[in-house]
Length: 294
Ligand SMILES: [Fe+2]
Image: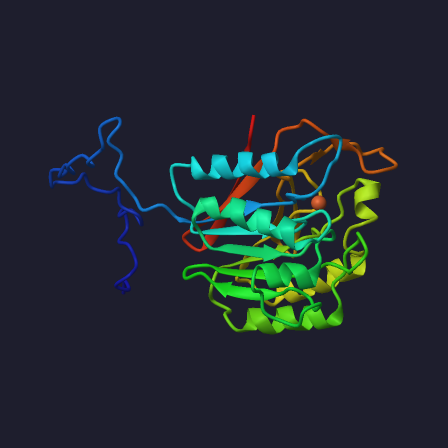
């Protein structure tokens, strides 16, 4: 007796498919915008990053105020107004109140809230007073700003009186706890010293020590919402990675660094174009652009 599922003799186990009898219905063509009439979508949330203005400096006769103004003018001329501004350290050369006032007045032309972190040339107490930042006068300048769709976290990597950076246990604990408060909010983490090795010895000599970079990576492993890490300090654009996240180092609004892998000392390139970065929150990801002024 043939079981119901067995094919009968001479009957193919897999009969050839029959031609479809129903006529295919044609889908209406998707509406395509005519050239020049693209559908308008809202601009993403935008954070502009300016770095290392060094107001008060006189490196090879370059004027830092003119440099910052030039970059601010370029930001103001963008088709889309930024939602926030980040200045990623070395706002001033000498840490004076006058120098910070110049930064504040110049950057105000952008018309967006300004968030600052300290660089190795900054004075914590004076910077804190100038920008009404929380915390004890000379303590690390660290904050978390809920900007709505995006969280911006500033981490202090400076060691007062020294050019090199560090991330002590206290700062790392603070970061871990602060990131734990908003585990689902896309986050941009800002620090002056980049948490990567550059391959340029004199820059790495004043960077973050490998042990500190490793400790930061372990914290980032636990906080997937940190979508980008941004820095300054190098006075040139660089991308690298830490804990699977992209690190972007923004160029300076002042003098740029020369890319010289065999340099024994920091090699600068006066006259090279200044620039800035734009970080756009697209969905839950951060897309970073770098604009260089000609
Ligand atoms: Fe700098």
